[in-house]
Length: 363
Image (cartoon, rainbow, N blue to C red; front, side, top):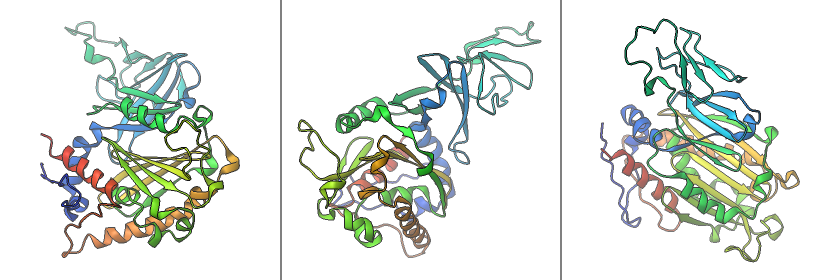
């Protein structure tokens, strides 16, 4: 199916994606292959694989992609990523984290090493042209930034260039010290389309109307969005100098009262940088009107938690969920199709819609 959406490059002329995009089940199905399998996905952090020969199974975006993969550390300085599906008859190989040099299928005994390479298969002595390269476990591209890990199934772009630019902006932070903080991590399920949640995240336009407390902290008039190729950045300026980053003199933002850097990576990942660390928000589609949001907090300074723009993030999330679910109900109206963009406040949403239309229109 080719929905042939077109979002005008000029935001002053552009219309938003039509309501059909958020409701149609065939369109929802098409974004798996046309968007999500062509992008990079955050899958956790390397500190979960600190020991040699550790094997960890992960299901990437359960109930949507449902792609089973394995992370392994066959050598101390090496992490591998490959399919968790046996190349004989498709059985899932590993169902829980373990430590082993070998991977043996419980169905018919096919064996691999923990680099994903085929080693042995019983009762296959008479099979011709065996083994072949395809009998190894399918390997995937893996990228690590500090301790955060990203997998690319068949990505259309290089993630290295994205994080080179992000690193240039936030390298003054002690990110090498980040640790997962379970007390500040949780999951939410909302009755709304995944893209509506992203739409809401990608603009500060709604802050004075939806987030009264946050609006008391952020300087709405200076709120800014910087658009790049496959990501964008929203900069939250503070009204209070004490709740800002301590930015060094040689930095491009020196002297600015910045409370947060809100990075969004296409299609469904938010990396929110605060003076205490990073809030990683992963938007996981389930169906056309249900989405799971994973919040994971990676902290390097606990003393700054719950201050400034990061104060009471749970309350902000509840406010966001309420308005997004209201929009979900509204787009079901027979009398709503598309809207227009604010050129000053909705650059991020326009960027998101443009990328969606570009990916869906590729043949």
